[in-house]
Structures are given as C-alpha cells and as structure tokens.
Image 1 (cartoon, rainbow, N blue to C red):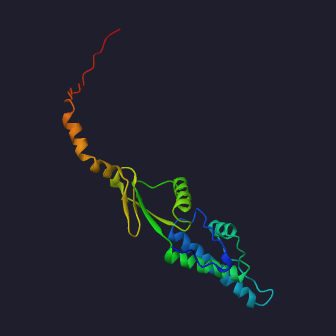
Image 2 (cartoon, rainbow, N blue to C red):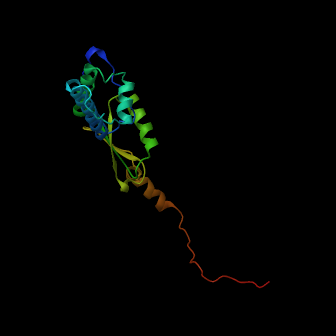
Image 3 (cartoon, rainbow, N blue to C red):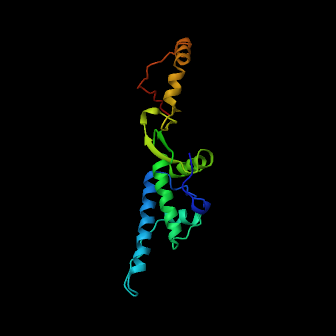
Length: 183
C-alpha cells in the first residue's frame, strides 16, 4: 500500500481518535467547510459579518499533529486530497466483540494497530453476542476467529473425552426444611 499523496513530502499524522470511516468523513467535511469559509472570506466585502465554521477536537488534533496551517491553501488542499485518498484506499479491519468495547480499549487498540499494522488503518467495530469472549477479525481477504466459541469448537474432542472420563457427580436434592433449635 502506498501512502497518501504528499506534496513537499509532508507527513500526515492521524490522531488515535480518528478510528472509523465516519470519523474520517466528518473531518473531511470540516476541512471543506474551513476551505469554503476562507475562500468566501477572500471575496467578501470588508466589514461584512461572517460566521466561523465550527471544528472538532479531532480536526484540531489532525491539523496540529500533522503541522499544517489551515490559512495556507496548499495545506488545506493537501489535507483534503490526503483524506479523500484515505477514504478510498486505507485498510479497514472489521472487529466483532461480544459486547461494546470501552473507549479506552479502542484507543489502546488503535494505538497498537497504527504502530504495528499501518499508520492509516481504520476500524469498523461490530457486535456478535454469541461468540462468548474474544473477538472476530475480518479484512478484505482474511478472517480470524479468536473467540471462546471457536476455541471450544476446536477443542471439542478433548472436552468430550474429559467429560466422559470424569467420575460421576452425585447430586443430592435440596431440602427446604431447616432444623430450628430452641435456645
């Protein structure tokens, strides 16, 4: 995989919070909004009121981490084309868990993925309550099942042998009567 188009060999540093394609699309809309605002400001009459576009912390983290100046048209264009390239070409990992993962866990996972897999990887998190524990990871051409359900399935013969060779358990019925002693 090649990196995004990089005029002047700039480095685009994605913040850890930008984990999904939805995050990427929101930041791209913000870039376009800032670009439109600055272009409109250049042709407006001096003194006419203008409403600054609102930007998110994610947008600001991307701009500051990548050392870009949004007042420079070349930086805005670089960021816009880079984000469009990422939306079309960046690798996406589909990871399914049995429950919703915490934000802290996802942040740590994204940090590890960006360091060891690709600095431009994105996640799509799903839920599969029937996997018990663990996760299922899917890419465009690979499938990995790290679930407890799959582990039990892989070890089914061993589990059945252990259950059949175990001594029989004696279960006594529960009694509802309690002895009451007078004092």
